[in-house]
Amino acid sequence: MAFVLDPDLKVLLCCALAFVQSAVGAQETSNGTSKTTVRSEGQQQIEIGLGPGTQSSNPHNDYCQHFVDTGQRPQNFIRDVGLADRFEEYPKLRELIRLKDELISETATPPMYLRADLKSFDLKALGTKFDVILIEPPLEEYARGGAAVAAGAPRNFWSWDEILALDIGEVAAHRSFVFLWCGSSEGLDMGRNCLRKWGFRRCEDICWIRTNIDSPGHSKILEPKAVFQRTKEHCLMGIKGTVRRSTDGDFIHANVDIDLIISEEAEFGSLEKPIEIFHIIEHFCLGRRRLHIFGRDSTIRPGWVTIGPELTNSNFNSELYAGSFEENPTTGCTERIEALRPKSPPANGKVLRGRGRGFPRLRGRSRV
Image: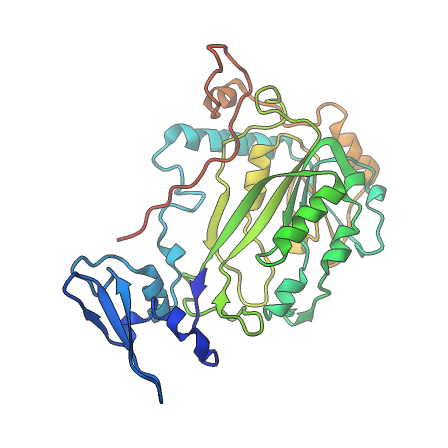
């Protein structure tokens, strides 16, 4: 989270000093640390030690200070975060991603979409139990942050009680996954409540770190009286039923992608999420029955059923869609993909098939 100083909040001046020491006269001490003199009207001078930093004898990159000076967020300097660059130095993983994308494309159903009022629509009318459900609600949190209008069209933002009332459990297969975008505020707790109510167990938190390379500056998306600006969002992942990475390699391929998405934030007023979430889901779960709730025209995608009130048209046919899975409800797997995909080490010397370890962690490096 990056810091933005609100001039109306004088009581938080001391907290801001760590980020603005160069602007208020940091002085070097004999032991290499900095001290800052604070001058307030009608008050005595106060010196606060800041520790080694940009003013010390051992200077280093201070991305927080750089953010205050330029508006460029620290995450702007993490390298190799794009889909095209991430596996540049790992040819086997690059080949794995290419082969999986080809297989996903070959087995994808034609894109189907349905314009519907989700507050009154019965999801069971879709006539299918889905392997993967992606939910992208227009949260009230976005309205508080100033995104109440996008592209000139007013939005109907949803409360968490309304989201909780969605009958997700009725359209989820006996073993399935749900991905719920829940913002960065109270949504983390409320999102977990939704997963429990729908019959899912939280198993992962995919975090979107928003960069502002194209439009540096302090965010316009601030809640009233906000001191900190939020530069990330969370997508909670839930699991229903029993899915073991050691035995269910026919349904999941773990450890293919990372649990961080680092990409440019959408323009002000837009609720668009990074397209990479679709890649993460498709690489992870081999189930072909995929549902996107609160989708838009821009998110219509082969292999998915998209439903939402912001769609401008409909082409969904429940019988035609259900008939697409009579032969095989999964994408399947080739021998080459099975050989390339990451697996956990064998336990007790035994050869275990179809094993993975979940999402790996991203080790980002800073530009110098």
